Amino acid sequence: MKFSIITITHNRANLIGETIESVLSQTYKNFELLIIDDGSTDNTEEVVTRYIKNNIGQITYLKNERIGIPSKLRNIGLQQAKGDIITILDSDDLWTEDKLKEVFTVFSENKKIHFMIHNLVHFTDVMKPTKPFYEIKKDFHSFILKKIIVSEILAFPIFSFKKSLLEEIGFFDEAIMEGQHDYYLRVASKYKIFYLDKVLTLMRRHENNLTKNFDIIHSLDAIISYEKMREIDPKNTKLYLLGINFMNFKIAKYYLKDKQKNIALSHINKIINQNSVFNRWYLKSFFFKYKILCNLTST
Image (cartoon, rainbow, N blue to C red; front, side, top):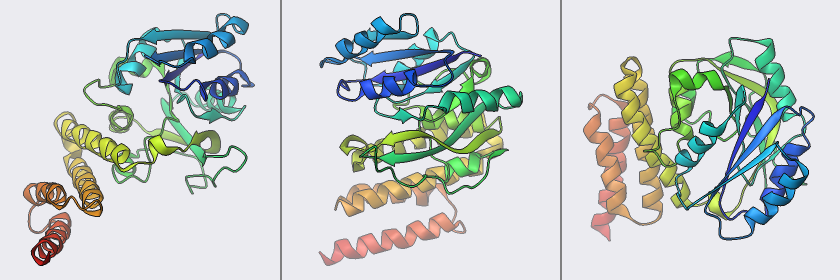
């Protein structure tokens, strides 16, 4: 069983070496690492080339003009992938040395598993990681669509799936900036997802992924996905409306905190307009709107 590891990068010369080393340190060695460079202007190519020289045939470097859309970049990797299992690794994250071995064991021991995730820790200092992100204490193989929609399971880049899944699910939706949350939804609407309660990824936290704008972009992407899924998976339309409400409310709170009350109101109004007066999200949003309006009147 061969793994195709897809890593997209942009100006990460100072970090990508550590990421590559965490792949080369794997105890399971049957893999290819596909590095998709999104028009880096630093010395990323020089760093990667040093590793290629010592690992000929195992690392492929694809340099592109700046695209800026992760879903498109990952699709470039998918088009090149030759492995049986696709695995995603961000260019600033690290793997434990048994990551691929553990994933191999999961797929080889249960042929009904098509898509899997696992636990993780965050870090700014690799020697001081946080506690495991998920508090789930056992493995499971089940339908988790609702857990994804209400953010109990987040669309982290820690997933692996059988390449054969592409025949039904397809590639990442390039109309959506990030695309990972959308892919989780599309898989979860059709298949059970396996969760392994082991920390196999160390996810770096830094200023680029800890901003309000970062969260808003992901939330807007999620709303696009939910609207699309209401069309292609009508049996779960109530769940997707729940997701739309959830994300609009989240975005409204961000903007209210930033004192952009009119934008906050626009997202609250979207919830009110899409729900009946008997829906709890209608009531929750109505009172939230009343609070904003009262505040506006008093200022």
